[in-house]
Image 1 (cartoon, rainbow, N blue to C red):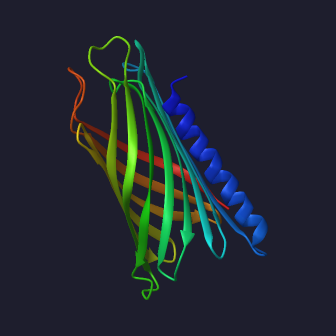
Image 2: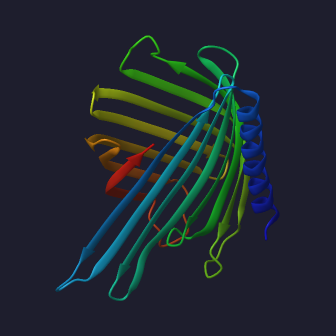
Length: 244
């Protein structure tokens, strides 16, 4: 395996260990998880099957916050698979004040049809929370330096990319009502060779108890892509969410 994968995997493991250590140190840890599943199948003139999964697991204590995220999309058509994406990330925050924190972040992105075999990112930096005085709103903004490796598909011509990047991220949450939550996430990883931006807009509405319905729209834009590949990927999903 490439050394970068080992490094990123090691970073994620370290973050998980630190998060677990923080949980032991604190008397009252708080765990929260959202599990999502979406399934669409069509038959007749066109036969397709799409499966969307997502998981967010958060542990938060007095000084630490750890977020593990997993996202996947698989679409199959009559002539074969047309989409296959897997994304895994882990972020650890250390709170230095009521509204400020340091963070460490690692991610691994595997998109079979993007032209890249995989992309791995590691970053660290400073974050701040705004709008805490508003009962129904919250805004988190963070930025810091990092490193990214992009591995091209074996059947494509070109060089793999290893570069220092600046990672910026923002997340806005608005509790529209007791049963509805709007979220907007924006991220940018910019380096000398390439810049990757992503926007995720979502609206989650409670159905009953711990079950909710979520509508999301994702746009990922890659500035430099292999030949014959598009710069922008979009995804519209409807999923059922189970929170606990």
